[in-house]
Length: 475
Image 1 (cartoon, rainbow, N blue to C red):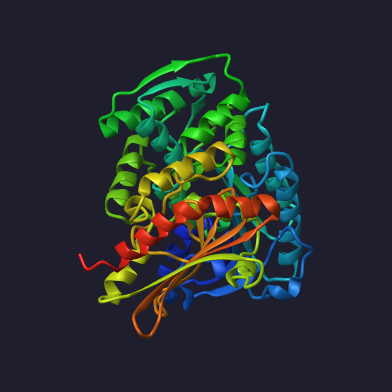
Image 2: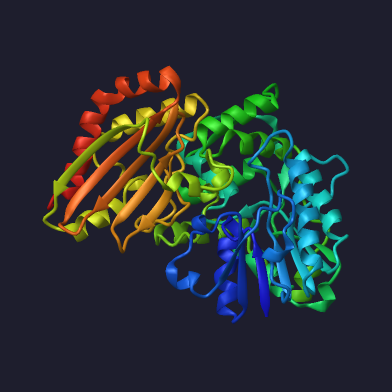
């Protein structure tokens, strides 16, 4: 079976891809930028990659004609607070145009449960996309999902941040809204179960776990599973905007995503039917079991994908390729080098930088910079990293974005997504003489960019000097 997988680099796409390959399917990965497809070389060799931005006017020559099945996993909720619904409609319309010239038999679309009369803008957009896709020249199968719980999912990570960081919570009234969460494993079982299943053609199904619960109960169950004492008090007068700020400052979510999530959290998300569960003979797991499996993956360092690696969790909206070449003119540089006694150990430290490992020197200064960044609307340090020792181009790494991760040639290039008056790069490169070159490059924007650089010089002296020494250390 030849399958088109849109949104390959997203949370669901990264989970679905290995399942499709293991089942013997030929997969065409559809991404906006192939340079940020976060898969290893072995997997990359097994797939075909096409670059398509469905917001741009269609160029149907980019897509091969012989496609059997397509997964539609495109959304724009994290990219905008005002017009994401228009973007999602345009993407769906252009998707239909692209597939009109193919042999596709079935399209599988993962949506959200939309059973209430009054829907949030996010859920209304999901329903509108569904109606748009039904106009395509193919058989559509829609899976309307509840909140997805799994290691790395936005819902799980937000709950995790709240419970781990706030043992006493003053919460908005939406914590009493009812929802019906579903484990990521069950979502994937449904998504593969309907594949080429003609009974599921031109049908829309609700998929969910067995538990109907409030967000308060979800938080409480998480705390119980982690052995945390959690106290929750509800403040009915907290506005949606204040709720969004509350989520933004406490959790790793972006403000745009927080605002759209809060808008949806006031709407009950409960399944109306379980027809597909009976049809595919799938017994969905409880919320408690989903949490347990998520913890196991985290403890074993086997988190396959995280929503935070999405480009829209940071400053990037589209192509990162233009940032890969570091400019030579009009820039300030902090260049350091050191002779290595053990290049392999140094390379392993470079590949483990950030997240739980920290930045090896002056971590308290990095944390302060992260707090300041969060206060002025940046991403802060809370995104961490998905894997403790694996890095791919396009990954989020604290408040950096990975541009180049070439372990074979011993080079790592990062681009700053923190709020700065300009553009900043951090590069690690080990040459053939086992010399580590560490280069911080800053291209200032206006007078304030230059002022910023000179103010940071004393901190750079200590931070970057200490960092390269720690990376090169023998112990």
